[in-house]
Image (cartoon, rainbow, N blue to C red):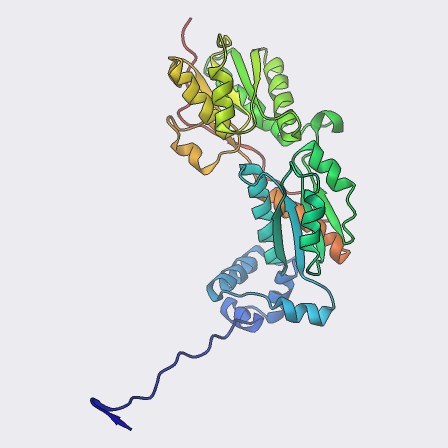
Amino acid sequence: MVNATGPLEPSIRPAPFKAATIYDVAQAAGVSHQTVSRFLKGFDGIRPETRQKVTRALDELGYRPNLTARSLKSGRSHRIGALTHDISLVGPIRIAEGASAAAREAGYVLDLVSLDVHNPRAIEESLELLTQHELAGVLALASTDEMRRAFETTNFRVPAYVYSEADDAAAGHRSDLAENGIPALIGHLAGLGHRSFAHIAGPENWSPSRNRLLAYQTAVEHQGLRSAGVLFGDWSAKSAYQAISELRELPPATAYLASNDQMALGAMLALKERGLRVPQDVSVVGIDDIPEAAYFDPPLTTLRLDFESRGRQSLNTLLARIERTEQPPLDITPAELVIRRSSGPAPAG
């Protein structure tokens, strides 16, 4: 057939997309396909340089495991349900991200469901949603006392693991944050001449909040310093801003330690509006090292925490229960002091 401009050109269609296989990954990484298979199954004993080659090849080829084929072959699901709440907060969302990455690397898919903690049937409704698909297990990420108790009394019907930060006072031990992190933060301020402190704590029904308050009080006492008072917020910048703004008189403190970076942000604005300069008149520090902390005005001195490893550890603990293998050892990076311009020398006098 001829048209007005000449013979029709044969249509050119792109070749159909072919998903990468472990053999493709092995060739790209320069390793055996057995090594790639062991890596995807989470086996230890693979040399770090080999892991890097396999990881690079997986990323470059966009490898995705065929979960349907794996499930048919093994006769079991490779989907994990994850329950969490308050994912607007840094800790819960970073823990969930770490768990998701670990699941993906092990050849599982993590279905994340955020609970409405104010709905008494939230857990039951979420489980009904999750169990519409066959699950290998459930990872329950609890931050509050209420959620932990609810998870611990739930019949998940599949292997499950409930992660909640241990309460230092109840457990009778000191976490890394209490042993090293907060003492380093207080020590940094003491080295700048500060002797009187105030703490902005998180909600009392969160074990991380209680742990940070206890660590603050212990560090201040052990270093021969003075706590001028404790204010309470709900982790948000707004709550710390209101806590300080509504005080008739400010505590006689030259440094404020907020239990997270968002509350430090609210505290800095409230203190500025009351005529204090940060850090010339008062220093403010936080905990978490959120990405925005380096861009506060002034940039925030804080503690960098390894939330992702907690998520990975939780997921790997669940996988050990699913696959009936030995539980992996705990490997959490210690808290790191990050010094920026929100902390300065204590004012004279």
